[in-house]
Length: 165
Ligand SMILES: Cc1cc2nc3c(=O)[nH]c(=O)nc-3n(C[C@H](O)[C@H](O)[C@H](O)COP(=O)(O)O)c2cc1C
Image 1 (tube, rainbow, N blue to C red):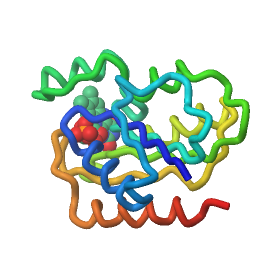
Image 2 (image 1 turned 90 degrees about the vertical axis):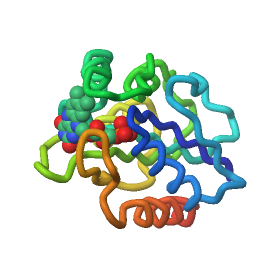
Image 3 (image 1 turned 30 degrees about the vertical axis):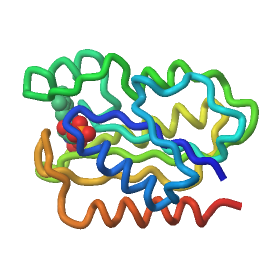
Image 4 (image 1 turned 45 degrees about the vertical axis):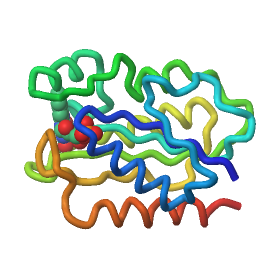
């Protein structure tokens, strides 16, 4: 099995959770890359794709929401997020299983999920959902991650690996 985890993270919270998901999948079989530098073409041996990013303005980030994050103190502001990485993907020629996750503030609980939007677009490209999109909580825009979420992310990764045919 070769899993690829593609993440976007401006304050590091989603990256930390992506690392937990990868650890749950199994470190030997799992590559983890920032969307800004992830390859546009999936390697032919990838048989599980996981995409995770922050929820911005009820959806995936855009150049403008990332710029807003910069003005709010984010130090890592990528030129390309998961939205642009997905947009650059060609239609996949085989039904590669995909799972998506996002991070969102828990208070106030806002509608909208980057993970759901990402999944919709990936399915339209021919990917096959391996699990329902999942959200993990952060306390504020800059974090930290809420209690128990790192463990939940690791368990979710293990479930993804275990659920594969
Ligand atoms: C411009 C902007 C818009 C945001 N919009 C939302 C939102 O609609 N819903 C939400 O729950 N969190 C929202 N957030 C909070 C982000 O989800 C939070 O910053 C992110 O989960 C932190 O993850 P990161 O450290 O990986 O960037 C927003 C943050 C920014 C900067």
